[in-house]
Image 1 (cartoon, rainbow, N blue to C red):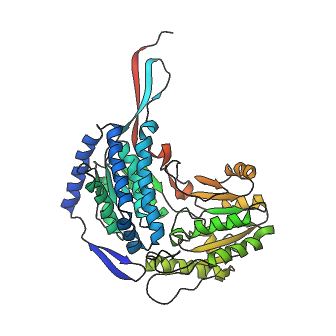
Image 2: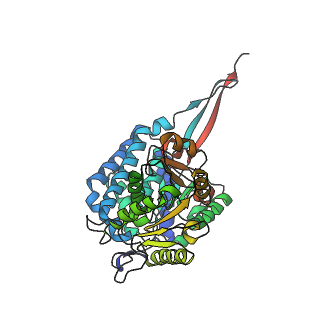
Image 3: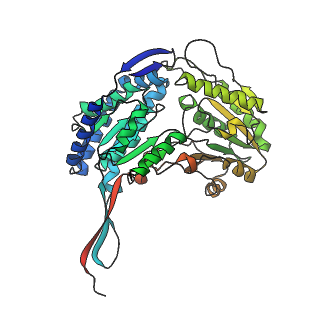
Length: 457
């Protein structure tokens, strides 16, 4: 049984039976059958379906958004935004997939030679709980527009969200089997990954989980995209607009109660402006309202599970014991639900727990840097390499980007995922790319075509 617990109350809100082995087989067969029909559809026909799904989500946002609030504690105003962003992703690929996948003519000795981009078959998405709708469409919109079918194995703690996403497709008349949710506990997904009908795997989750998925995919010779954890640095230099930087970093750190891979986790500040930045961050984080995620006035909801809260509390206590200073929050509250206060740690140094580990909660970490070179050294001093931000002059920031070890860098702006731009990590933050023109290329056959005769000369 897949069980959803409301993290604001600790109460069970939904129980959904797992798919039987026979049920999984039925879904795999249906996905394969749907793929054989769908790959022959034109881009215009595929786009018509994706636009219909997007419209359905926008029209039903007040039904869909509360599912995230109920099952994983996302504040309702953020949940509405996520549904609309997922719809935007579907619309973006409906509009641009044909252009992204247009054939590429390459000169050779042939009369004509080019690369065309063809679908490969059913693609499996294995996804976490922290952004149920957005991550689903980040995976499925490009895969479907490329001509593949999609199987969604969502986190077992958000079964209602998984079924609702499947229903979006069903209610607009998607072909049977084109998009299906697999209702499985995580250990049972390995058999699906190894099934010969599944031709690609997209995984979002921990580095440990990603390593296991990569091992399985490699043993089966299947393409895989991994979007894993991050301990993203936000570098703030002395010439930055501190007020704007603090406001933006506050937003980045606190989205989804800090449960975001690309949130600004390590705030590395040049020494001459450190105290001022610490004051601004304390003020801005301290003004946030923690409470019932179903209320519009709530800024920060609970963490998704009790064990996640316990892990964040451990990291905070450990960092303080190692010499870090608690400037705000830091104490687990009494009462129902899995709430944790907005917390700010100061004078964190390399080697401390909150510097080394990914903090997946509403915890900001301030780190002093002597200068730009020291800030860059500490930014890169991590096993992760997902995203980063730099706050300084535009010219200086742009020059620094090539020296930052991360898959994406924002200069004087928030780090975010955008359907128009590729996203992904390096080092233990993953491999491959999602979104933009790069993302849709991950699950296609880049087929070389050579047409003779050989050209004269």
